[in-house]
Length: 128
Image 1 (spheres, rainbow, N blue to C red):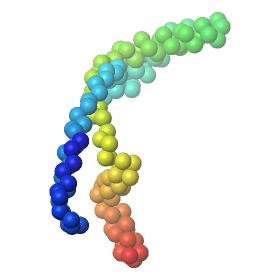
Image 2 (cartoon, helix red, strand yellow):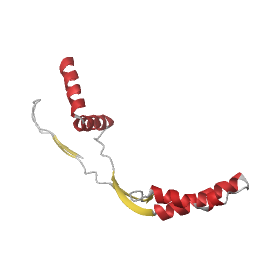
Image 3 (cartoon, rainbow, N blue to C red):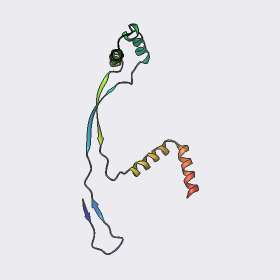
Image 4 (tube, rainbow, N blue to C red):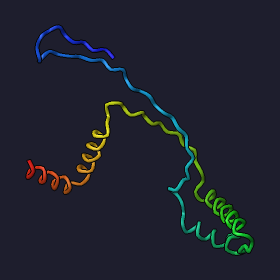
């Protein structure tokens, strides 16, 4: 960081600063299911004719849970297959504080709902 302070004795002199850019990016990979085209009715139909329903297990609780897990995973893999995705997350800038984040969140909320914006404006107008 470099700061340039001019040699002038006044309160109104120009101070310039050069800050290093913060371009750090984090890449991550995740596995998610494709729920967009999930057909609930087809899943229900296959579940109703699966071994889980047609041949109930009278073994121990842990065996029953393992079987339940196997059958549901197999059906989910068929109806909502897993997909690998990769994404980028930009690191937060040091100047973007919690106060800035809260202000931006509130602004987005107000802009999404005009009635809320008008009510907030009226409240501020009456207060100040």
